Length: 125
Image 1 (cartoon, rainbow, N blue to C red):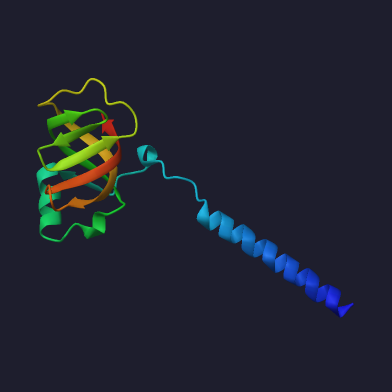
Image 2 (cartoon, rainbow, N blue to C red):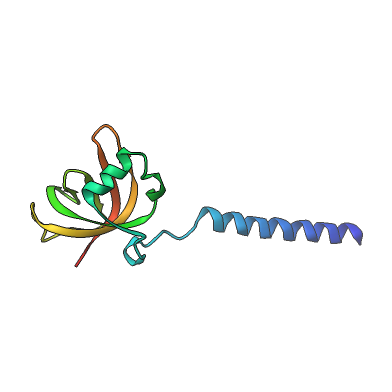
């Protein structure tokens, strides 16, 4: 009788532990489009923060960046030659020299190209 009780408790602990591990490993993806931005900043100032080592607190945060489009490629734009923003969908209707505001997740600073990178960006109207 006592062995059965210990066995049932062990089975229950394994089941609960497995459920917790599964939920931790397979969390829902973030929806950056619906998140509230934690910071609104211009593109050159964002670059300056990373150059002075003041930008590490922005990593993996949702931010809004304003600037002028200085470069375009399929699925991405460059703002003021200091922020590279990749879009999760198509970015139609944008042209070089347009002033825009975008919201996205800051994924880091590329020291080689001296550019801050954002992903999952959307244009704010």
